[in-house]
Image 1 (cartoon, rainbow, N blue to C red):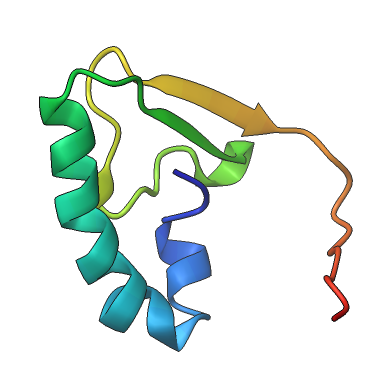
Image 2 (image 1 turned 90 degrees about the vertical axis):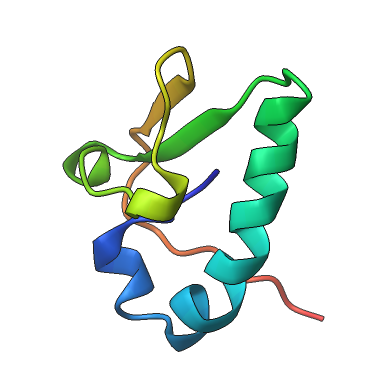
Length: 75
């Protein structure tokens, strides 16, 4: 799970309208299968996960410490 946090989803219209509804049942299936779930975001966002996909006890949390560069994929 990467960046399903309030600050980022508020700036991305499709986050809550399309991505979150798709991710919620997927995450439930992953957990039911006993698979590992890992979360990654910047330190300031670690406590701001959207409730529908928030980390559960035992999930891995990775703090992004990279500089604030935005990389873009060019096609």
